[in-house]
Amino acid sequence: MPNEEWSLADFEIGRFIGDGKFGKVYLAREKESGFVVALKIIYKQKLDKYRFHAYLRREIEIQHSLNHPNVLRLFAWFHDETRIFLVLEYAAGGELYKLLKSLDHFSEKRAATYIASLAKALAYCHDKHVIHRDIKPENLLLDVMGRIKIADFGWAVQSNAKRQTMCGTIDYLAPEMVEKREHDHAVDNWTLGILCYEFLYGVPPFEADDQYDTFRRIIKVDLVFPTSHYVSSEAKDLISHLLVKDSSKRLSLQKILEHPWIVRNADPSGCCNE
Ligand code: AMP
Image 1 (spheres, rainbow, N blue to C red):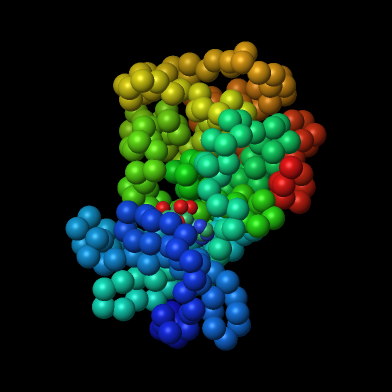
Image 2 (cartoon, rainbow, N blue to C red; image 1 turned 30 degrees about the horizontal axis):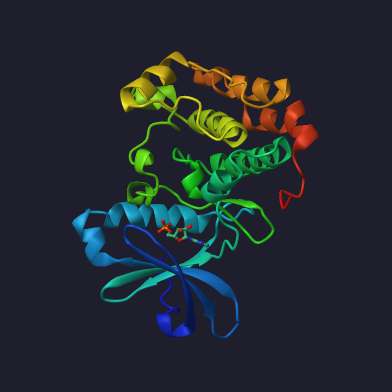
């Protein structure tokens, strides 16, 4: 699957965008078309160190096969002696996590727009039998129109040292995953409930000082809605129907899209530039 037609010589390299555990990301332009992309450069040596090759390959194959407006495109990849290059859609709006931190929490309109977009993206993935299992704000990017993009199909999971407390976090995991029981696509529906809460309150619902407490709160579904600021009862209703321990009773992705809070608040274009 590596696209042998491409090489580094096809790209003009622009500004440095950011660092990941396995390499660096640069803005780049394909010389012939002028098309702007993000070029992720992964050092093979670092992959060797973490015995990551097979894992990376599988995740690249998954992301490459997906084509949805709310899933970051992986257009192509190629490699040389020492590096692997991923030609990615450029998400000019940057990390959702940073926006959330700067705004403290999102408006209901913004939160609903993102949740609806994610529900659509996940429905598309589930149709293709892809379960994400690791959706969290660090894995979400924004494009120039303010549309949300799922940016990471797992392989960078272990590369994330961005949030100290997030390193190996279990905050986004469904009860069946933390309890190491069998799980299916419904883990992603649970995570949408966690994200919806975090978008509206600024912190994930089961956050605790140590992982054991988070674990305990997740398996008890110890859900508390703070009174620090107003959040509509419709939003809380949606969250409560996603954070359900019995995975078969969680709201389906289709039902999320039909939920009154989503219908009332989500921008159908998926764009959010309030
Ligand atoms: P990563 O290696 O995925 O952790 O990415 C390192 C940095 O580059 C992070 O700050 C990301 O937000 C940024 N980044 C990664 N991919 C893209 C992309 N496709 N568009 C824009 N920024 C990106």
